[in-house]
Figure 1: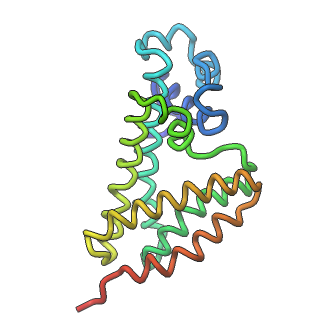
Figure 2: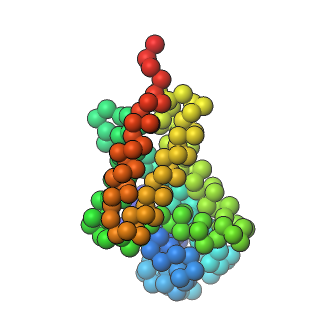
Figure 3: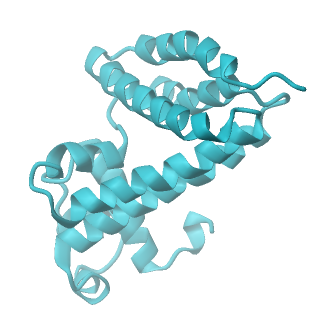
Length: 198
């Protein structure tokens, strides 16, 4: 569903995700979300009776679904899909963004995790579910490329955690080198996991 056709509720969830990835959970206020979404402030109470926590949790869930759906798009863009090629495409999304827009934003799921994991509660649970929503199609894609199913889930975890760490380092260093290094170093390990054809 295109952004232009979204209703006010969907626009607010999307806006919350964008603001969280740039400013973090604590600095993202309901007022800012409404303004970013071009929605009347009163509509926040209507759509999110659970307040900011509900909105943040839904934004985190949206981000996990978005990342999971991107896996199929990345695969479709590869002439000959390989695990290393898929990881390179995942990282390129970030190197391209940073080259175009600077290093202002990271992953909203990671931002919510860093700020909310210690407190526990529903936002930590939403972040864990978002990572699972991303990990599952990634593991399926790896299995589809010949990685044994038992290993595919572990490698999906490794790919996501490596990517998230490289994003953090790239933002800290204001340089895409950590993303490029992760692709170069992890690629051979990922491809070596493909079971030889019988």
